[in-house]
Structure formats: C-alpha cells, structure tokens
Image 1 (tube, rainbow, N blue to C red):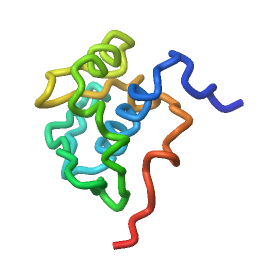
Image 2 (cartoon, helix red, strand yellow; image 1 turned 90 degrees about the vertical axis):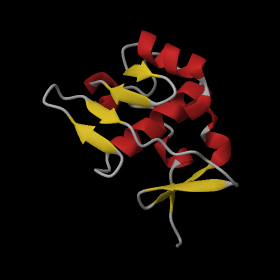
Image 3 (tube, rainbow, N blue to C red; image 1 turned 90 degrees about the horizontal axis):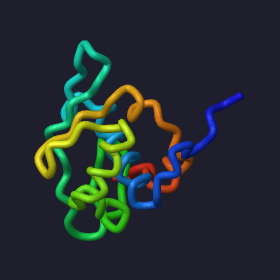
Image 4 (cartoon, helix red, strand yellow; image 1 turned 120 degrees about the vertical axis):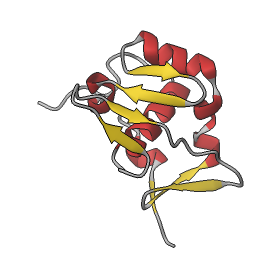
Length: 113
C-alpha cells in the first residue's frame, strides 16, 4: 500500500515549498548529497516574472512564495523535514526527501523550452 499523502497535515504553502525543495534536491547543480542521507541545498531560485525553471521542470512563481517565507521554513523544520538556515540554505532530512505531498504534479510542469 502506498504511503498516505500529507500525513503531517502540512498546509498548502508548506506542501508547495517542500515539493520545490525535493525537486531541487534531485539536481546536482542545486544540491549536495551528504553521507547522512540528507541533501544540502544552497542554490535556491529567486523567482521573477511568472515562472522559473528547476532542471527540466517549470514552476509558476505563485507556487514558490514559501521559498521566501521564514514561517514556512520554521514549520517544515519543526516537523523534521528540513534543517533551515533561512533564507540562504536548507538541508532536507531523509524524512523530507521521502515525504509524499500528493501535489508534485500540480506544482512541477514539463518544460516546453
């Protein structure tokens, strides 16, 4: 049986932000894998205009407001999904990497260019 989506009951902004962190963690140009199983992200995007790219995916800027919201980072850290150094860097814990948000396909769109 697949894991239940959003078992920690993250709010929509927290879910969107975690999806972005998870996607950034998949790309070596934005992440560093650590022996502990965590992934350090230091190259966080700064959305401008109506979209930005993460690897081959496109993200609408409206879905990325949590990247600049300290309260979102605090909530994700409190739930054990990240270790935050707001606003500069974030480390995803194994729990954060594996967390099933249920909204990935709503946030990450295939790139047409």
